[in-house]
Amino acid sequence: MTHLSRRILQSKTEKELKSILKEALLNLKFSEYDKVFYSLITKTEELMIAKRLGVILMLSEGATYEEISESLKLTNETISRVHFEMNSHPATYKFLLNKLKPWKRRKLLKEILGDLGFRALKLTAKHVGGRIY
Image (cartoon, rainbow, N blue to C red; front, top):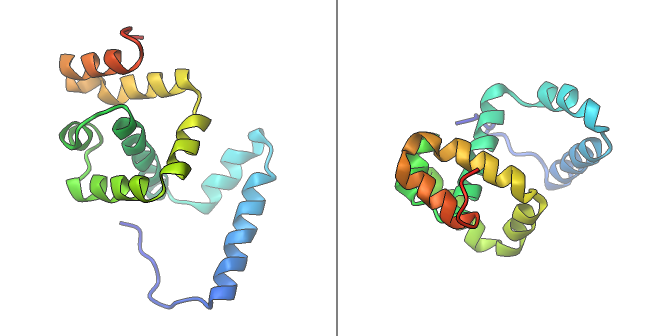
C-alpha cells in the first residue's frame, strides 16, 4: 500500500493542494496527460487506481468477490472497501460508469475476466446482451 505521511496538513492547505491538482489535470490536453500524470504518481499508485477501477467495473457487471480476487489479485478486504464506497456514494459511481463508453467497458471486462475461463465469459455475455466480443 502507498505510504502516507503521519504528519497531517492543515485543512486549508490540503484543500488548496487538491484544488490545484484538479485544476492542473483538468486543463491538460489529451496529448499532455501521460507526461504530467506519470510525473505525479508512481507505477504502484497507477496500478492501485487501475485495479480499483477494475473492481468497480466487475462489480457493476455482477462479478463475485472470488472472481474479482482471482482476476485482479486483490484481497476480499480491498474489494469490500471499494464496494462499500460504491454503496456509500452510488450517484458518483453511476456517473463514473456512465462516463466510460460501453464498448470500452465490454472490452476491458472481457480482458479482465479472460483468464477465469468459460464461466467468466458466460457472465460477460450475459451482461453485454448475449454476445462475446
